[in-house]
Length: 410
Image (cartoon, rainbow, N blue to C red; front, side, top):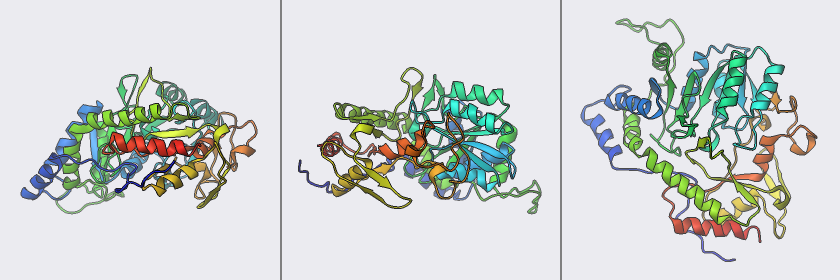
């Protein structure tokens, strides 16, 4: 089937601007509050607390900064082990390593692609002294928090919720960003609400919020001169970035509705193909549908081999693979993206423990070599891909993308 390339590139996800962002930025300039204090910062703290249902929100320069401070607040010390979702962006893990701690990666499960509670329980058998668990809500879908929270509580562990991708999502009616002692959201440029950058640490603990505020401004003590008694960081969000976030926040529900419509159009458009969309439990979860993703059935995969930085595949009639689809989309001026490569497969972290529901699969990165030890994350990475999910994409553009993807299976 022949298609004409899109004149303008269709991106994975880009910021959607509204009118109020510039108004609040201009207000910051007009009042000369262009530093890390000002009304925009005060307002987004209030607005986010109201939306999520937490008591305190600390605006920071990035979601990574928020993760780092969450790890410090959890009391993580050098040499401690910290359990972490295996399928995530490396910022989640880097925050652990910043404190000299040792990440232990917990495999995913197929129901949500998030941390597997069974593997988490297995990890506590192997590392019973671990006291912090970082759980990621992948692509805007909540993890299985009833099970995960119960396991953490049983072992006396603190949960840090990495809700960077799931702002506005909920599990059993409870918003994500509230399941941990310390929680993180992101306002990076491609997130569902953006400030161009920025993030927040969310907590119900006033003392923790005050510590995070202090640490984020170089740990300055309450003195008329610059007094420092502990290490601090330049992590505070600017009032300009906060102005963008402030203008975006009233549109969160609108963005989620449009993201959900994109997900549903893909799901409908792929009927009859040997694929599934990124899954969630419709009875307990309401994702924010940040990115729509698909998973190709194993029987419909052509041969695909991925190295650390390169890939190759063999075209086969009636079959395809993520990398062939990426190449085809690129030919038509469309951006796709691989699923997050699991952390245990990354050269930086491949020597760290990786726990599946069967065993510690440390050092094993080939899903076909695991035998009965099923490496769910490696399998999803091999067969999955992120689809264009920009809410400015028109229905007609998405329909054409669906047809392009369908042609890959011919």
